[in-house]
Length: 178
Image 1 (cartoon, rainbow, N blue to C red):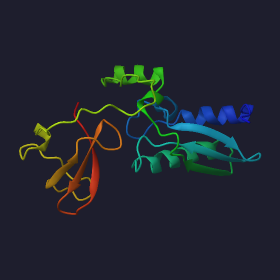
Image 2 (cartoon, rainbow, N blue to C red; image 1 turned 60 degrees about the vertical axis):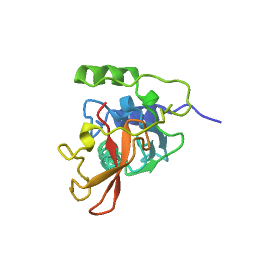
Image 3 (cartoon, helix red, strand yellow; image 1 turned 180 degrees about the vertical axis):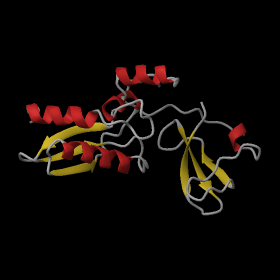
Image 4 (cartoon, rainbow, N blue to C red; image 1 turned 135 degrees about the vertical axis):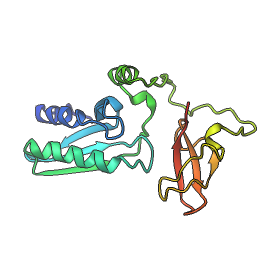
């Protein structure tokens, strides 16, 4: 049985939700849709559920620390931030306000799918893109090498490609230029 949030939980949800996303500071965590819930655990302890935009999101640690800092400043002695992977985040989780802010910031917001199903992919021969040529290489985020290869045009989301560094052998996601 799901219970309605208390007034304090609602207030803490509002505070945590107002934390800016570290990668897109024009959006709050609530507008981005990664803040899932706030659960009061007594009078001065709280548990916060965050869902990353993709598994392994490097910004998740910063988001967690920022949420913890804000809630501690509001009197919470103990703040636990949990990573919740199910249900997975999707671009449908971005609020209408977040979509508006993306538009104003110069980023075309994603189309709303509403079907909850998998992202349709067109299969066929791989085409070389400008970003995959020697003139404009994709650099490895781990070691900085320009010696990388495309493993898949699609990764954990349709807006990212999966690449591997041939220098350090680490795989990484690359947000595609759309």
